[in-house]
Image (cartoon, rainbow, N blue to C red):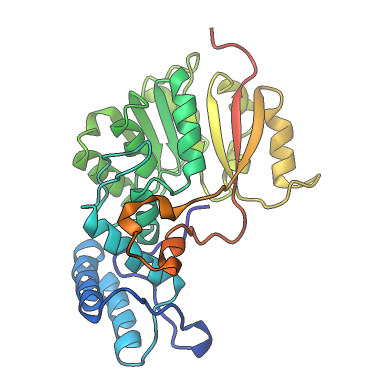
Length: 314
């Protein structure tokens, strides 16, 4: 599950005492004011007056009513600080040199972890391993294009096919592809629905050779991945984010495990350890802020199902 969206305007802060938390300790008053001004400016540019109004509410809540940034907004402020220092360019990990948007579409709060190669690093590792056997990456639930464009910038794949329901997300993917000079290697479509396989065919996708699929569509993958579709994609590898927390008999996960067993080898990977102390860029940050940067604000321990074909690709 990708983290909730906190764009250029940050999160809206309630003034209820029980939720006022996380006053930034290492961001000076001048720096914080500059961040807030930039949030307003970029919100207007990216989202129009509605986004500007959202940013204004946050500003009033904090400056007039005395509310402190909540946890999510503090993560955003930390990510924004690091993004400025690194010029919005990924410095570590498989997506090194990927340039990110100055105004994030999906989750500005995750940008810091992305820049250091820590965000969903389990997925990054799996993509890197699986890419050795395939040329095409299919990102289903592509959000702002972090994985799609990153997979091309890193030359792990020759081409990418994206499915993203939100039109704003589709536009963000295109802008990110343009920014990183890979727009000629990417296809961008809307929702992955009953026409999913037909849409893949329209790009020239070779079902016999297969590709690497990443599914993260907030639970809709359970209904999309029918037995018929799995059979058609049996020569491909898949990374599926599991949105059901239970593996008990009768659960969505258990049913999915049974369906895929006919065509794929399968194993589950879980969210693992991070060590922010490895990065010299964070050496002057407080302990709290270094570890907060590792957080992805998930409700529970995240798991991904990894599938590889049971038969040889040859």
